[in-house]
Length: 431
Image (tube, rainbow, N blue to C red):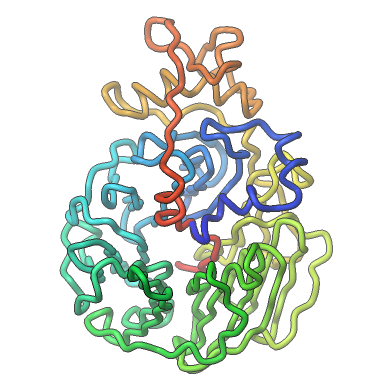
């Protein structure tokens, strides 16, 4: 569930950063607390945030938290994640390989081992795809058994080709769109776009015809595919003005040609709805909606500040919103994209996700980080007793015997962060 470079880095580059920092508590990695992406399956809701995963198992009745250490990330590396369509299995990318949890507590290496997986995608029929990008070859792997085993679905690409976006057409699980980068020392950055019509066994390069105004920092992402027409695909280009500006492009011929349909001076949260409508939201530049496939857009008055968008199988729209800003909610929902309802605030988190002793979640997230997070976010719950002032210095809280310990800050060198960060701000409508 990060791009040019990361969804979360958008907050660090916006003009409103000073105001956000003034009114919002800082999370353990120094960033304002914010939602990054959402996935929903039945009554299970997962919200990826700058400080871990906030989740509900009862359709939003109760919310719990898992810290980043539980799933192998930290700093400003924001993992991509997917929920299985066949079970409660969660897949997440990490620096040292993709991780999988089947019990919601213990994240273990997938069958792909320590291969660096730069993008993942779930097909409507339950097939799961993982795009590797490392010295062993940039290959696309496919699993038909809920991630238990993987077969190399595609021919190998060049080593270290980095896939920044991968989407499977909702109406055709054999149609895959892929976008990425090829960086060779001493050579200009090369943009990569491919299409597969055989579930990833082979890929055909598609031209960049129609893309304009790209800067040296631009990254191309697949922003969504029509729910009924696999040839109708949308792309999002970052840094089109060399800084924070983004643009949305449309292709009606499977990526052979592209036409710009929208541009904003900041990151865009984009959603292709099941009914064909398009919604494009921003943090500060308003939200617009199209009912004609992007030919025209109209402003949505009163829409929240949108950092991400997602639509579930029941056509409910979820949006990451300004918890400590004008929305006073971390997640809001809508059925029509016009009126929005507050769903949860970070202050409403009831407790850390309950896991057994011996797990990172219990032994570190609960014992070390919870009380500090509770104080920083203004969480009202007293499910776990915390010593007064236990979080004032970024310190931890009470562990099993009531002692306190300090919070470890996780981080990465800036160069690695800019390379690996690939938080998806694009919104996807998947059953």
